[in-house]
Image (cartoon, rainbow, N blue to C red):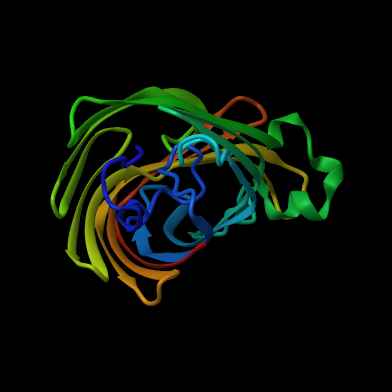
Length: 294
């Protein structure tokens, strides 16, 4: 969801789902760099007993154009997107269907015009060995994400957002509605909607706190270490937690994140059509984000 009424720096005080085209956009942001780590948790599987996750995200603005004759919201932005997840599975002698290193690498083109906003994001979604051996790359390794939404102001402090999005945060690539209501009251911004909700408190001109809930899934085309087996790997889950953002300088902001990931599941869809699925226990996540505006 897009926060529309808060001061501009509060719009970027939170931590949108890494790399999601459906996440709130801050046109003034030139760089997002984020790192997080989820503690080791147990798996309900006869072949795998644990999983630990380290992830990073990079969003770099490559180009921006604003129509100086129109409102500030009339602009176009091109960004480089790279999301990386390293799954460390504890196995009982089982050969895994993936090497555990998964990437989303691509571009995002976004247009904001008046009350409308839309974006398209083609990206490579595969395990790292696909990049080292391009011969295995096919159409199924390319993911097309996108969003189209509109914001209606109902008053000075209330806005309604609606639209549609295609990404894989719910565990597989799919179209999903984007709906929500935003309220802005002095130092508070409340966004209630789907697929994410947030409450932001501007506690001080230089720092803010945000509580948030959002999906944390993903979908990749993966290959075994020897490239002799390939499958579709899907992870789903939900995260809720808090973040503290500090304005270190006029252009640099640092956010510390503490979240809990729940309803976690991992699924492999094998080439022969079989599905192998396992559940994971809830786990804590710690993360840091650096943002540069300009």
